[in-house]
View 1: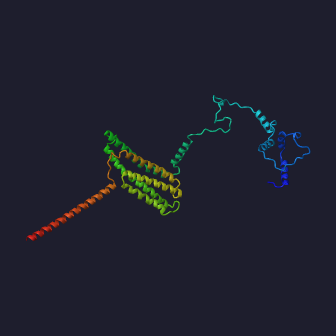
View 2: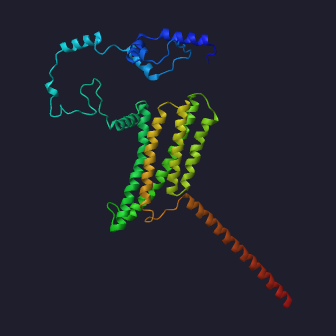
View 3: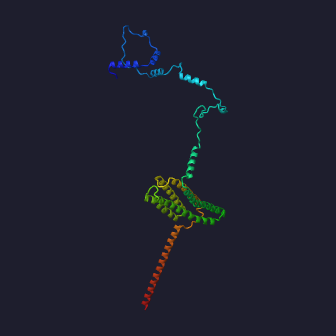
Length: 358
């Protein structure tokens, strides 16, 4: 609030001086009441109002529009020059664009726009994923010797896995028809029991070898020396792999699958830490993928004939048989000892009776 009258008069005069010319034009359009029609007593002197003018949004916006825009009947010179230049241009014919649909207005495909919206490729994501898979399995950075030897090391796993699937199918065929396709049911079962320890033993050897690689990297001081942390990987791998040979076939394959997965995780972490070459994680991924798929296929094939084949005694069964035979031998020895003691006691009793009779 402006408390003094002089201050309010000064503010009002300032507003009136700063008003734009457009304000006067708009104010001339508003009708005013003539002075002669105003009922005012003669000699009455009108007092000057000292209050500020009331803020009117509509009139203010009209004043700004009138002062900022040009008159409608006077076009801009730039617009006139542009229209003349466009009028002088000649239209170029394009008969190749004339078709049955050329006069149809397309909603999302405007012909007149410079930036035409390209059709979205629905298979772009699929192509991108296929490209990533191709680059992953290309293994361009892997040394050729390591790549060839590693791929050759997969052949026994793939061969035993496919043989398990075929023999399982042949055993099923023999159980249904009474005769196998290439082999009899007994021969297929015998070959299957020969393949089981081969696959399990080869898996234990490969797991031990993958752990020993970290000992070689430590000796070569690749990424520095890390001591027991790197040596521990080479110790844990065979400690997990070889006891699986004492398990039944299904449990042994599952345990080896878990060991391969754990070693891949350890190798990937070693690459991240700089303990192994950058290409080693991709190389290990491809090998682990093939080995894991072979194990899964073998388990599926054995699951189809679980109730149709006899299980050969494994190392665990042999240990149990050995323990049982030892217990039986001890019991037999104990029975013989008791029999000898009883025989000796009876002999002593007979001698005492003979002495009493005499």
